[in-house]
Image (cartoon, rainbow, N blue to C red; front, side, top):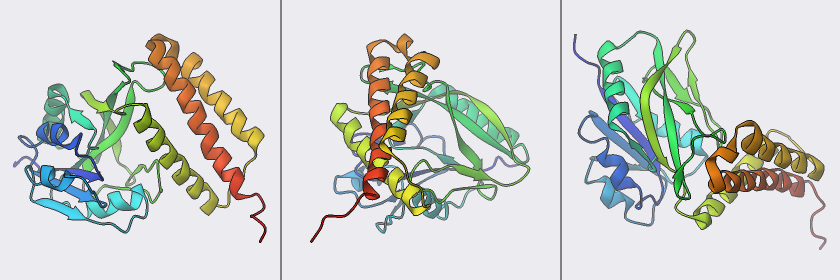
Length: 258
């Protein structure tokens, strides 16, 4: 029986700093690479086209979920492997993926463990590791949700999950400025999503969520074992949590008088 085919799919925007190392970890063993760009102004296109002919644009941004759905429609192979531009496939993970394709088990999707490099070290606690995400499945057995942010893979009924060996190395943030910009963007999208669903909140609720976030990451998930980076991540994450709820609260306040 012929081994099933595999496409690595990415959605990108202004990822020139990461794209080369990501794609170079894929190009020699996947059958195809599909990239859907949402309007890069750097040289992401030029880098991508060194590795694939399938570079496409979709600039009418409707959220991460819808963008991934559009990218999946461009995939023509048996399986799709989702990867972000700031991620790199390790050799152990590559071999595990290829073994799964060889077995080609019916009604099975696969989770991959991400190991994140943040502010000078790999994070091994803080709720960040192990960080299993569903990334590999047959093209007709799964799809992404419509969520603006924190989109999730929705699998067909009867599909079971198996864990792959090896890590997906995740180079999360270049520096603190990158974190703050990315966090602010995600906080806005989260508030947009909650507002669209008719959700409301209060500042006391925002404070409670922020405090709970810090305790969970630093104490319950043992972020203190990640050293100074673990403490910084817990503080920054609690701040981001507060901001997304505070943004939602602000939207319910009286508008500026004429």
